Amino acid sequence: MTSVIALLILIATMVVGVPIPLSFLISAAYICATGGINPIMLFSYGFNSQNTILLLTIPLFVLAGSIIDKGGIGHKLVEGLQKCCKKSKSALGLVTIISCALFGAVSGSASATTSCIGSIMTPRLKENGYKPGLIGGILASSGVLGIMIPPSILMILYAWGTGTSVLACFLATIVPGLFLIASMGLVNAWIVKRDPDMKSFAEKAAKNNSICTPVDIAEKKKGKSTIPAVLMPVLLLGSIYGGVLTATEGAAFSVAYSLLVGIFYYKKIDIKTFKLSMVQAGETAGVIMVMLFSVGILSRLYITENLPDLILGFLTSISSSRIVILLMVNLFMILIGMLMDDCSGTILCGPILLPVVMALGVTPVQFAAILSVNIGMGNVTPPTAPLLYLGGRISGAEVRDMLKPTFMLILFAWIPTLLLTTFIPEISLFLPKLFGYV
Image 1 (cartoon, rainbow, N blue to C red):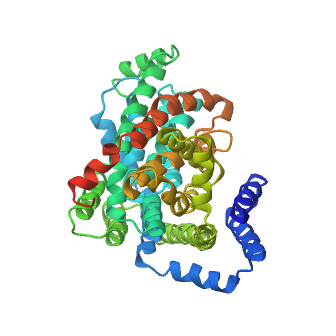
Image 2: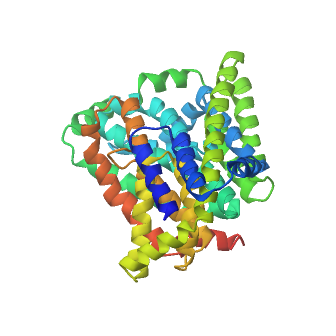
Image 3: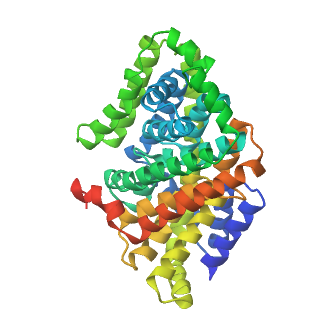
């Protein structure tokens, strides 16, 4: 019962606006005070749990994402994708979605993906008739692809917290991520096709024989090829899955590659921008490490207090159906995704809920994919929806204008992906089995 009250305290403190790491520590303090647990031992556990080279991957990917953003690689990546898409009304929306997926593959962060691709694509989308509400909805939902298309910081944290293979977790999220890309592209095309205001913009683009903006024209005049930018995710993923590099080494490679290309080819990285990237990476990594420390302590206490068994007992008391229980577990994770950032939600739900779903026949690798879809959908589901608000700030859209396209993306893209990933194990296990990780 103590752990249940502690969980309610955690949720209540977050709802009233207490910073997430502090909310975790308050909940942990309650368990220590009522259970007579020595907190000194917990502090030692929190520090020791972070003593792993795997966590070095996080600041490296954050640094790579910042360098990509400031080094011109993000712009060139979008330009290369734009050349591959036909000049239709929905082309730029699809470019935005795929760009977020590829940028996420080299940065591993949803917020970094949304910020970088959003700043690049918003002027292009507005120039071609996309309404701010639709732009914000697309950016929020497709930005979450940054935590699904590997390598993903979320999957690194999940693997660290549950002792699962990192590469197996990476592979498990690929097929759900591709399904999300396709389904979001279809929803975008349907929305754009039904919008009568888009016709005039499409005709304007056709007359100009281009869907480019002044930003595109300025970039083309510089004469720099898009090949180095497009080649980056190919080299990164190929080296990791080919067994040439580990996840941590792949993160270091992404930093080195983006730095060399940004300095010597696109020539947009100087000492000032590199210093700014280092500061941003340090701040982000510091925040994540503090959360890892506090959540690691709380997760340990929850497991010690048998919270997973209590949750499973509560769910089975409501229904004995495996389908119903899995649906309730998914709903719980969506709510956690709405209340917390993606990193905190992952390292809290992973260790706590994994024993629950394993009792229902779900493997740790499949649960990695289920968790990523749930946390991603929670991050764009109102009323909290941290990424939804970020997409709104970047696009200049009011939240009320973003609700309709966002709910359409949730209903026709996110929910089908979640159901398929939950109830068809091969969706997430096919690639891990193919590469011999399962």
